[in-house]
Length: 339
Ligand code: AHG
Ligand code: MN
Ligand code: MN
Image (cartoon, rainbow, N blue to C red):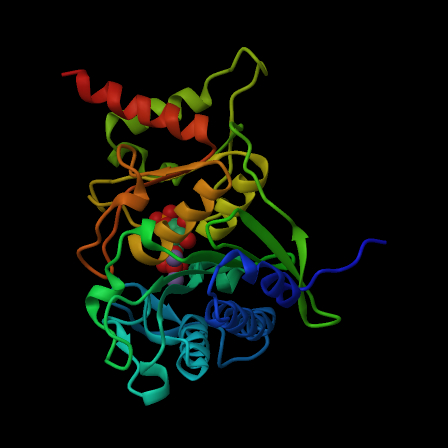
């Protein structure tokens, strides 16, 4: 039986990848793992503990009803980041503005973290997989001062690390520091994330497409053309592609990462910039996708190159297997030239 490699052992062993690394990033990744274990415990009890199930009774800046677990998870991650001493500030889906930590120790932190504490939260009450998505940057402001908006509004190419936690049939942590993608599965019997998916690579192509087709009439013609392409009988398999849409981005993304596929949340009449947020949903997943050999674009431009202008800025999101994203982009481009 091969030796189990825990997340901690893996992080320590890979620390050598970063000359001059003094362990701060390792500590942040470990802090994320600790908070994820606590959120995983709460997610697994969501149906039992009344303080968790159901709406918080407030709405967030997105105008979305906050589920109690969204807020519990948000506070859990903020707590570990604020006390860890490596992070000087955060931005999250559940906070209107960014949070600059005021504690002297935290102000010395070299990093900022942007995160979606609970993605797919509309699925909490129906026991469908949900996730956490995170993105780590080096601060641009001077250590010892308060974190600034400029620290938060960096293009995805500047990410030091990115990843997600999937609270599914098992709890998995998948992350990259720019040197490939590795997946860890939580073993509840020992409370450790153990390396289960080393050096993850996504298939060049696939047969799964994930989009909320209820929006199809509100999309641009190019998107309609691509979805029609997916639904045609393809000569190589004599079958159409399969539509698979969970309504939890992390769950749809993770399935496609492993099996090959594409996830599309395009611009619609209702959401002219798309629904998904650049900073803490699209950028981190785009880094993972690219590091695993896939692609992530707006349907036209590379996600990671976008210079953010607002914390909760939305962008259209086409992500997954390289050839499938390229085909979708070709459909979008072709439709533009048809007057
Ligand atoms: P969140 O729960 O963090 O707001 O994210 C939900 C996102 C994403 O997870 C999912 O794929 C998408 O919203 C579903 O949107 P629709 O219900 O409009 O399809
Ligand atoms: Mn989300
Ligand atoms: Mn969310």
